[in-house]
Amino acid sequence: MSDAKSTGRMRRWKEPIRRYERHLSAAAMVIGYAVDNFTFGRVDHPGAHLVFSAYLVVAVVSIALAHWLQGRRDRAAAAADAKLRGGDSLTAPGSEPRPEGRFRPGVWLPAATQFALGGLWSGFLVFYSRSAVLAASWPFLLLLLAFLIGNEVFRRYHARLVFASLLLFFALYSYAVFVVPVFTRSIGQMTFLASGACAIVAYYFFLRLLWVLDRQRYRQSRWQIIAGAIAITAAMNGFYFMRVLPPLPLALSDVGIYHAIRHTGATYQVQEESEPWAVGFGLARPVVHVAPNEKLALYSAVFAPIRMATRITHRWQWWDSRSKHWQTLSNVSFSISGGREHGYRGYSLKSGLRAGDWRVNIDSADGRLIGRLAFNVVPVATPVRTWSKTLQ
Image (cartoon, rainbow, N blue to C red; front, side, top):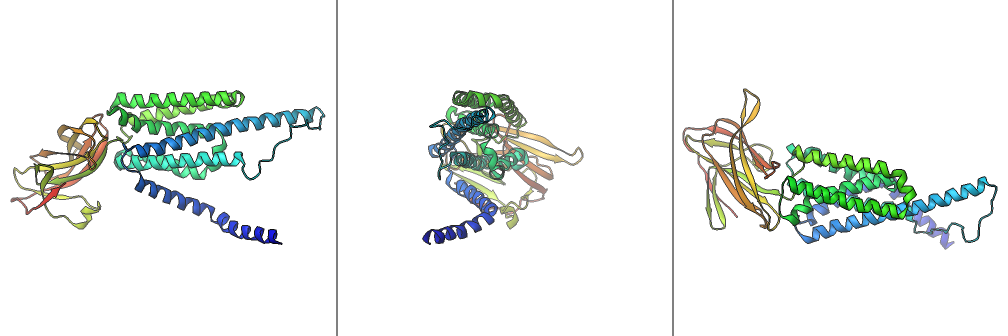
């Protein structure tokens, strides 16, 4: 009687979960991303890399174990089928399949893979989105978002060796792209190529592990895995050389356009004119009123990992309405060094500003877009009233 009651209670608990499973999964994904965005700190903090490393280890172990167990099941099924075809319906002593009970590796190992990869996509989306300019990097961010959502939608496919292995390779590559610069304290083409080489070497050892655990099953999927890995490598290199890949580990912390700027000790004193509230929320472009012979100052703070030294460029561009393209009128480059929590600060000055739409691109040493500020210049006869502001 008590067993019947407990069974009824379990059914009452499980029924709402099954009914709203998709909604609960979507809510869990959103909450998980929000928690990651809050808990993941700087890209050069050891704690963040311990989390990423743990996710990668779980993914590697769960994929490898699932591959090994599935190989054993395939061979057992083939042997049983051969016996039935041979007319032998007897089962040899000790060869009966063992009951898996409540713990079923065939279910829990793909779930572990899904959990680990979901954590990786969420963490990648946090860091890459912090470093990205949407106008330039939206294809890569959209791809990461698709992987994050697809990790939940295609949960059943994590049991397939090719699918899970290729997701792991993309995760290895995405992680290497920003962890190698943290350790080498440099960015650029050679660093990016070294990141790809590290990902490929790590993946090679993973494939060797699959080979050792079950050669027959690995042979069946080997060329699909290799072809997929080549496609992922080509895509990542395409993203980088087309300057779509965000310049992680660099990230823009602050940016502003001012009428005057002065560096005093550890602070920057700037003069700015009042702007509508929409400008503060990024809903409108700043409008700067410029008097004759007046200069404007573009201030930026760019975060870089500790002990990293590199160069950034302020690229001043004006929209030519006749030719319908942006004209670069000034490039100002200067060195930055990493380690400061709120980014390395610097500024550039520009005089002779024409009326119309302007933007300043903040580029990394390898030409990728770290940040951008767009504004509109309106000429006036006399200087407008400004207010003093201190930038820490």
